[in-house]
Image (cartoon, rainbow, N blue to C red; front, side, top):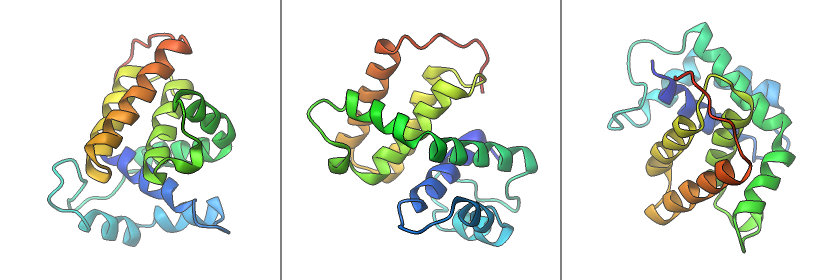
Length: 161
């Protein structure tokens, strides 16, 4: 299973945290269970990047998903601040919830995951956004992430994923 597929799963899990009263440990435990992962994978078999196969996530991929989701959860205020800073003229409450989750995933990878170059995080965010949002929102996500990387002077990373 690809890292793209793991990112998509992280986005879907992080989106669940918008539901009031959700406990991150319970959400992760339920969402990373084999039965739930198989159900999630079966929902969109026409997506070429969707992880439809006989396999689910291996332990390394589960750890990657968990790191992303926990990181987003723990750094929500910081990531939301960046989103509002670069979403000129828009308050976070007016931004599509899925778009906000995709932005958080990419920003977290850019800021805290040394093995993920900024360009890869942006490309993956755009790719994922095309499956969940309209073209206008895809451009919005791309623009915010581009401005974020340029203006926050994110150092270039040499490793690729």
